Image (cartoon, rainbow, N blue to C red; front, side, top):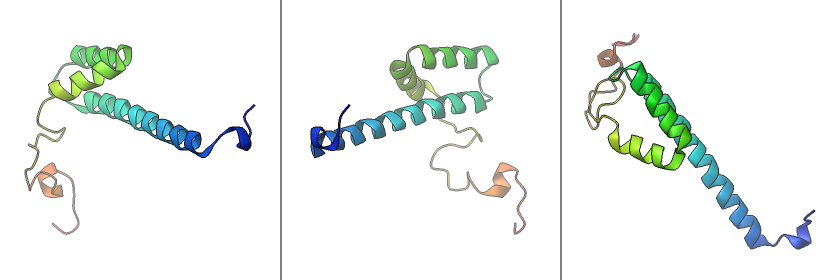
Length: 97
C-alpha cells in the first residue's frame, strides 16, 4: 500500500493528468452517444449501428462519428448561424419575445 513518502509529487501530478484525461474521454463518448440518439436525420437502425460502433471500438468509433456526423446541429441550424440559438427560432416559448 503506497504511503505519502513512497508517492512523489511528480507521480501525483501524472495521476491527476491521467484521471482528468480519462474523465474527458468518458464525457466525449457519452456526449457522442447522446448526440447520436437526439438526431432525427437518420433512422433507428443507423442510430443503433453508431451506438454499437462507438461502444465496441470507442476511440475509432468516436473519431469516425465526429468526422461523419452531419454538419447541422440537432436543431437543424448550420454552425455559425447567429440566429440559430434564439429561442423564437427554435420553437420554444419566451416571455420577452
